[in-house]
Every structure is written in C-alpha cells, then in structure tokens.
Length: 204
Image (tube, rainbow, N blue to C red; front, side):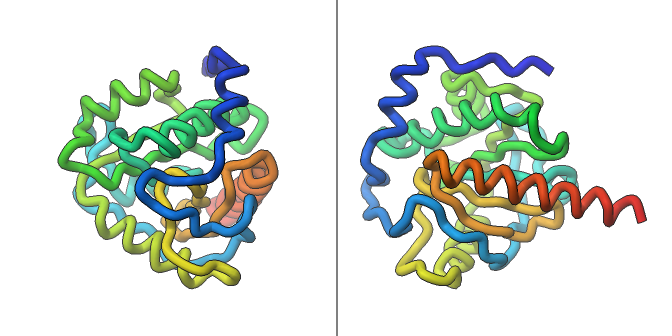
C-alpha cells in the first residue's frame, strides 16, 4: 500500500505549532497529551463515507480507529488536525495492520460525501487508511463529548479539531490524546496494544 508523504513539510511544521484554539470554541483540553481513560462507546447510525457507502457497526468493528471530530467549514483548528491526520497516515505502516484513521464531521448538512471526498484529496488522503464519515453524527458527538467530560482532569466539553480519540474494535472509546508529538506517540502505542489484544481475542 502506497502512503505518499505529505508535501510542504515546512508549512506542516508551522501549522502544527499554531496555538490550540478551535474555531468558535475555547480550548478545554488543558494539556498537550490526555491520559487514556475508557469512557463510553461509539454506535454509528445512518452514516456514509466519502464515497457514499454505508458506514456502520460492521465497518467500525473491523479496525482500531484513531478518530477526530471535524467540519470542513472550520478554518482554524480543523485544517491543522487534517494536516496532522495526513501525517499520521504516513506512520501507519510501522504499526499494527488493523489501525485506521477516521474523521467524523459534525456538520452533515454541508459536509456531504462529495465535499468530504474533495476535502480528503486536499490533504492527500490514502483511501486504504483514512475514512471520512457524515450523516447522523449528533449521537456520536454526544457520546464522545459525554465520555470526555468523565475523563479525569478535564474541565469541559470535547472540542472538534483539537483532540484525537482512540476507538477499539467494539466501538469502545479507549482514550483521548493531544495532537502534539507526545500525544501521537502515546495514541499509536495504545492503538498497537488494543489491536494486539483484539487479534489475540479473535484467535481464541
């Protein structure tokens, strides 16, 4: 599987150094790397991907996901997160084969499959590694948001474009992480652990 490196590395480095301020939202994460804390589960309903194909429990359960909540109309933190996700997909070959990236829009009216497809192309999405979904995302956002507020040390709601979420094969939320280098290293280490545990469980 070919995973081309994202061009303009200098621009990416500058983008990743921007202050953590989500568009129209206050940064509530409080730290660069958030300790994993199991809290809640994602149950997809009436979702479709960037190609218009159904995305539900079967698709969700087939992989361990590094997920981010976003919307294409966000012009501040969401493009930075998309650049970060584009970088993350270049790291996947050195990690468990079942790990994938998932971007979930919270603006399904505007973010149609075709809009998400074009957005993915803008950030050099590898179709084998990175999926965008749209549809009835309000329950997903509510689940992630509620779980985030239950995580120790957090003060408020989950912010789109600012935090990575580790989702196990059963849709269980395994933890929340910052998008800085430390957060990326931790989420990949935990994703490997979750993927290995899932593989061992399936082989029994």
